[in-house]
Length: 272
Ligand code: G1P
Image 1 (cartoon, rainbow, N blue to C red):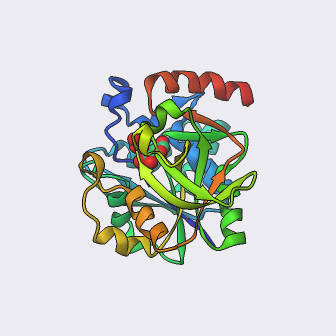
Image 2: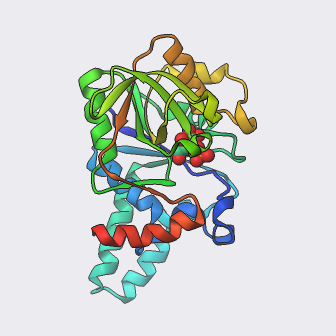
């Protein structure tokens, strides 16, 4: 059973400056709700019981957002009948019970982020979600967990992207493709068009096997000097570990760029 979700939150958010210079990009509101809460809601609906947030020590606002009891208790004392406030506090209390923090002080990559979670991980597989990648309308994590339950393999969310943009993504090679999934036989982080095995890109959702931790431990830095989860996945795929691409049905919203972030509010409001 997949019940734990890692959420890396140590990225610099350079593409969202100047907004992200004062508010972590994951707390920027989209239609009145922080980006991060959309991700948490997707996980809750998919049956996740524990979140592991990977944050830099120098950015305390994410912890403060969820763990600020004294602040709420003071206001609630004065506004005892405020139903909305009560609901907000109750929701935060629910999240408090589920969240663990681990630290990554420099953005050293998704693989490095996973390694920091080692002390909390249990079971055979866990989920990882990149908060920049919102998927709405159809719960992608739920689809992936159901593919994992059927195949017992690892699962990566994927969609076709414009060929001209392959160097912006992790790109998958595959065989045995059906309408909604395929078996992955290669993966390359941000390849040149001439090296790309397809134009199916990794979108930020992964169900990963516990054994990826020992691969990561011995893995050197990859593109951009970071330890990429993509490189560890490639090592396992080459050892015939089963990884499936889940061609998700939901609508993808890229919130990692200013243009995407601005459009995200409009797109989400259309589907609410
Ligand atoms: C990361 C991953 C990449 C994936 C992308 C999806 O890249 O490294 O494989 O395709 O997320 O958004 P980043 O967006 O951090 O450059």
